[in-house]
Image (tube, rainbow, N blue to C red; front, side):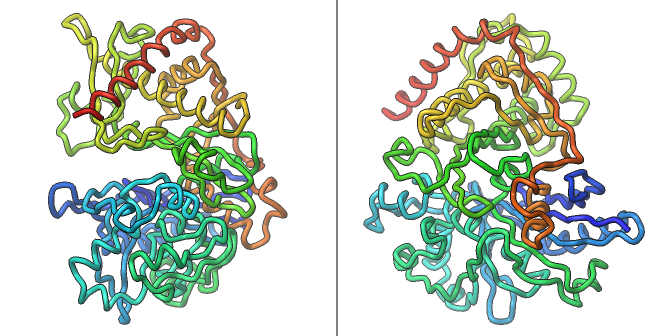
Length: 503
């Protein structure tokens, strides 16, 4: 008989279901598309009916292809942050579930009479308009009657736990992304709830990280073939789960996760105050294990910038994904370009600047392009621009933590592109360590499930990852070439921020 841990990662583009050995090796992976509806310009919503159906279908497929006599020890679940759904007393979804990048909400912190410093010191979140409390306030203003019928507001991972167990349970890591959690007490904040006149009873019970949320019901056995009574764990926010899945269980490591967006994460042992974190420039909120806080920054479009530019230079339809063939072609052509992309410079602010500036109105631009340039030069410039963004942020975080990171752990789709990792390694002048794993966030969610049921004695044992290997990349050859270019990129970033600020 084989014992496995199951992890479910509900991401922006896909839902991943993974079964792993206790040592971290993937036994089976199932992927289901996340359906996004766009009811009007600037609005984007997760289709909850499809999400619900895919939870059952994904788990059933996972079970069907596992070896006979396999025992599922636990199911850990993570999801994107900020998105939320409301259900009524009949357990019906009666609200939309806006994506984390949906633009319908207004930034109302000042209107609420809350200073930027107080906001950060309570929530640990960078001052922005994406958080759940703004979405709930938006719904209340426009659909007051429906608002009064909402029995419970749940983050996406909370909702999946509810589907499997009937329990309405949250966790500090994901609940922090709502803007309604006091990161110090790790419970709902009375002060933040008061701002939008929301009752604590309308939110899930917050339980500690790495705790069992509930157990699968008899109806789940019928829908998925997973035995009733299987422990279900609300593992947390997807980025910290990916960080945990890449073996980060204590202070001193840093990770770069590149998907549609790019996130940089490290750990600290206390909630850092506003002024310590460059005046609230980086999120600092509860990690997916107790006693640590996730210090993180992000770039809204990184892999997204590559996809967008790739579609332009290949003539791919705007709403289509690049094929693997096209990607390999573009990687090969970028490799044929030179350090510095033969003079092309790209500002990677396609959907805003990201950390540490957090200017959502900023836009991308291409500088220095001439008729002799080819698409390989343009794609290389995309990779270089995100590399210089990453270097800027590693430098900032090193100052905040007073720690010089000897290497960068790399994960996500971007880590599978050798040229992209090579460029980043040379720009940062550091080796990159890449765990050979299928899906870091789903893996992390599964490992947290194992920790919650006592399979591991501590987080260090859970993240030993005895059954997986690592790849090391250190591009020393191109380091010198990128040193001088960094200064020019700092200048271009500054100009892009200043020019648009004055418009």
